[in-house]
Image (cartoon, rainbow, N blue to C red; front, top):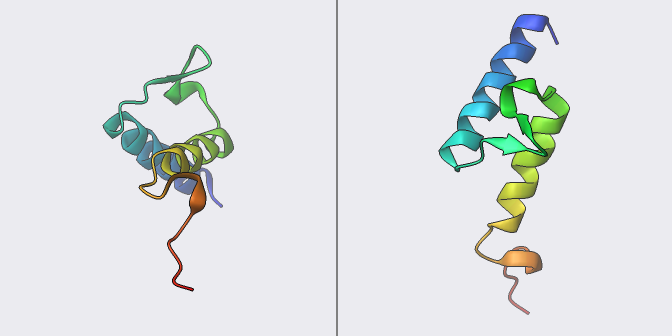
Length: 61
């Protein structure tokens, strides 16, 4: 991935996290975090706040 693409992706994730009221992680501002850490935090936040919680998707048996 080119540097410009990485930076665009980082900015997009930062904006999403800010929208979700996440501004800092471990005393670091979001803009200080690398792309991989931003991706991890976004995935983790979405899983923790998923309407099905730790159970994942509802499956009919």
